[in-house]
Amino acid sequence: MNSKQTTPTESLEQFRMRVKGEIVTPGSANYDETRVLHNTRHDRRPAIIVRANDASDVARGIQFARTHGLAIAVRSGGHSLPGYSMNDGGLVIDMSGMTNIQIDPATRTAWAQPGALAGDFAIAAQEFGLAVPFGDAESVGLGGITLGGGIGFLVRKHGLTIDHVRAIELVTADGQIVTATATEHADLFWALRGGGGNFGVVTGFRYELVEVGTILGGAILLPATREVLEGYARVSEDAPEELTTISFVLRAPPMPFVPEEKVGTMVLAIFPCYTGDLEEGQKVLEPFRQLATPVADVTMPMPYPGIYDLTREATAPKREVVRSGFYPSFDSETIDRILEFMEAAPSPFCATQVRPLGGQMAKVDRDATAFAHRGANYLVTIIGGWLEPHEDGTLDAWATRAWDTIKDRREGAYSNFLEDEGEGRIRESYGEKTYARLAEIKQRYDPANVFAGNQNIAPKAMSAAA
Ligand SMILES: Cc1cc2nc3c(=O)[nH]c(=O)nc-3n(C[C@H](O)[C@H](O)[C@H](O)COP(=O)(O)OP(=O)(O)OC[C@H]3O[C@@H](n4cnc5c(N)ncnc54)[C@H](O)[C@@H]3O)c2cc1C
Image (cartoon, rainbow, N blue to C red):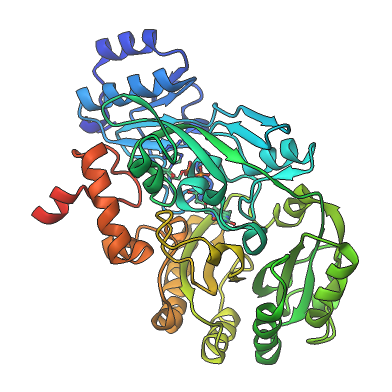
């Protein structure tokens, strides 16, 4: 243990007595399991992990960290790509035990704690034929995905996760428990919807739900050629907003529905989610099937949470590197580069994810929330995945080379898909105007930048001084 990790024992014991949840330290039997993150390449060793039970535990954790000069990290589902939800030698406020979800079908609202997972929420809400749009992985925590925006299988029909948030309870840097809504702390409410973990530790979200029952989901795998990818863009742009697809260029995995001779060939795996009349949905999917003879076609009606059955394996924890950007179009030049670098991918867990956007996401006013890229048409993400630490260098180099070939055509970034890529990329996520407003609100609520272990927006005065 280095000197930074030494905790002031006496105060720690008093702190332990006052906290209702659990305090985990390097000597605790569950220390290693508690500090594991989804991206397993991050092996961080905090001095103290506060497994919070409620908002007062969070407030005490913040106060203790500030008194002892410990850096703070905040963890909900643990899916931060750069591993910001753990730190070395600091204090982690771990919300993963705060998983309560209460659905009120009468008002079509839900109150949920940030440690609840997207998949658990989907199942709880589906009991009433309701949903909130989260992302493509059931294991993502509500805390991180909601604060960053939330782009998922319902984005074209129902918009972003933040478009369904009606109230946020959080503990601010000075330990106050505050509820932010459109009318109370309205500036903070605006900032929290897209501005990430910069403004406090969220202890609860109130969501408004939408009706989503049986959807048409599954997968259509097509050979990944330039013509198919160009056709995919064309057909997606013509599709009604009831259809959202999330697609991957990758080597066909050995899944039960992939013919053996096609395993390992380069495919475009399209995961559709059609909400609406199911027969109409089949017609909407037909032009995708017509792009080439499908390698596999397993689309079927399913309850909405069924979408997670298909992504479960691909989104399991592993070592990961990600590069991502919003694009105005999915053009032939970008397609050619993707096909080239995917051929050279050094691991079977590598993929390039393509998300056609638009629809409801684009209809919300750009200034209504801190999510600035409402007008983006595509989100393209290079994902390198692997298992062994000795492969880190190879995968990092591949992702960097791949990104270099397509990055110039991007128009913006999504903060939830950023790695540790520097201030320029964080600014890119917001654009000048939104970033400036966020920095002002940060100045008011966290002038000392207590919440710095994140895609950090420096308080205005600090930015100006720098
Ligand atoms: C496999 C995988 C699939 C994904 N799919 C999608 C997708 O389809 N759509 C999408 O939009 N995103 C997606 N993401 C990105 C995901 O939304 C972000 O990584 C998000 O931050 C994860 O939230 P978390 O709570 O699980 O992570 P954590 O690592 O726990 O938190 C990430 C960060 O969020 C902040 N934070 C978390 N909880 C709180 C809180 N209670 N209070 C204040 N700040 C908090 C902190 O800054 C923290 O560092 C995916 C990520 C992975 C790894």
